[in-house]
Amino acid sequence: MPDVALVGYGAIPLGKYPETTETELAVEVIVQALENTGVTKDQIEGLYTTNNYVNTMHLQMSLVAEAMRITPKSMAEVNCGGMAGGLVLKYAMMEIKMGYVDIAVCYAAEREFSIKSHLHRMSAEVNMGNPCYEPTQQPVRNPYGTQGIISDYAFSARRYMHEYNATEEDFASAVVRDNKNALNSPYAAFKSRITVNDVLNSKPICPPIKLFDACSIRDGAAAIVLTKAELARNFTDTPILFKGFGQYHDCSLFTPSKIDTSLSSFIAVRKAAKQAFSMCKISPTDVDVAELYAPFSPQELMIPEDIGWFPKGGMIQGIRDGSTEIGGTIPINTDGGLLARGHPAFVTPLYETITIMRQLQGEAGKNQVTGANIGLMQCEGGLINNCFIAIFERGD
Image (cartoon, rainbow, N blue to C red):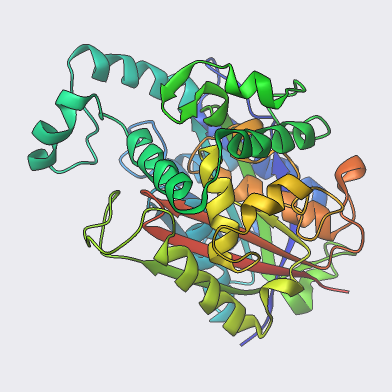
């Protein structure tokens, strides 16, 4: 089967686009990606996207195809929580490997801030709770105010603090690192330098998680062009090879159903990472730069441990000594991550992948990781109950 390469991308800064439709955002970033590669719209054979917040009956890609006057022979909309964007890339990669298409465009466009914030207000007014939970769970959770998934992440943080003596200052240090990286990001929504004390003094939401410990939803759109590696040099001097992936789902939704399972570690991350490294025949220490899907700061410490860069509890020292800073042992979230870049859930994995592409192509500017050759992108759904990890390599 042929190798697959990522050859170009398009993206808009994360923000608020209340007057622009998702179709318009999608077309904008796809056109950017095509112009950056020299691919013509008539060369698009595969068009793949994620779910979005507009009721388009899962035909949003058809709207885009009509708007662009293109006729792809393969189209799909993928939805699996927050890792949908990663699975879109996987789907395109498999279509190319099977020889069904030669050139594919993966995109996602969502106005999560403009639409979802309104839905959240409606939900709160009628005390609906989180629709992801089974109805039988609502009477148990609602009296305690646990109407959203943030409580599950907070339970996880408390367990990690109990088991490894992590502090709220350690969590805050991850926020400070991400915000520092976001200052030089072309896409980040939040570009204010903050301190550990700023995080600690921000509004409590669900202890130990405070306002600055939490990601903020934003509108966003991104597109990536993939093709067979043998064709990649026609479109870029620095193709990025899609070397392998890992994917796993454990038997739970948010809170693990097994009483012997700790919330401080995530089996889906461990299993997906093991699969990805095995497929690529590399080890965690071979990775030069990583983008992690952590909606809340405590999980910024747990996920690197499950991937294998630190022993359990070891990331506490790692965040204290700068091991995950640019220039450290394993630079993480060099564009600001979910906490500072902003988080339109289904688009986020594509933004993460674009960050990896920019790093491996040597185009990350002041945030460039010297000698970056291998990058890792991780995304998830639920309380990290499902996980997808992709590994990319500079195709010199």
